[in-house]
View 1 (tube, rainbow, N blue to C red):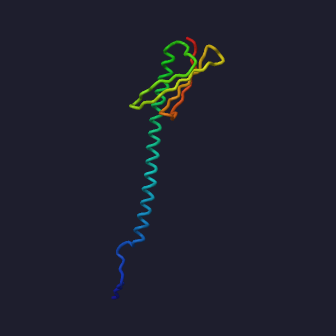
View 2 (view 1 turned 90 degrees about the vertical axis):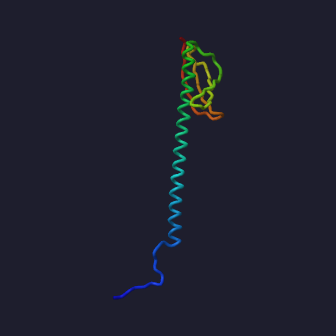
View 3 (view 1 turned 45 degrees about the vertical axis):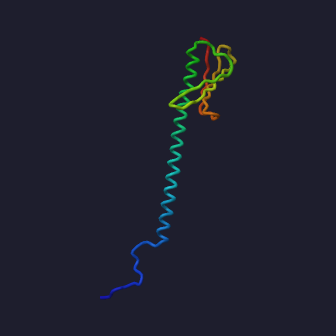
Length: 124
């Protein structure tokens, strides 16, 4: 019966192995954090776009409900949606046909343009 005895029995991991494992875990966690941040930004952008679309459509519906041709020119209106204060810049321009006007609604959050919606309004 032969017994092997080593001066240094290895019963665990070396310091280098532990550091490599920690490095791999750190890289995986950073990748997960970046993916989470990208998803959060995308969700916020989607929310901003939906709110901006509501603001633009509301302003264009107001113009249609007046049942008269809008005056050519620029105007703006405030729009509050879901606790957010946005502004809608309306631009009314003539078209080659005098019975129609082009109406652009551009929704702004400060100086940043979020959404733009264009329609043509005719005589009623």
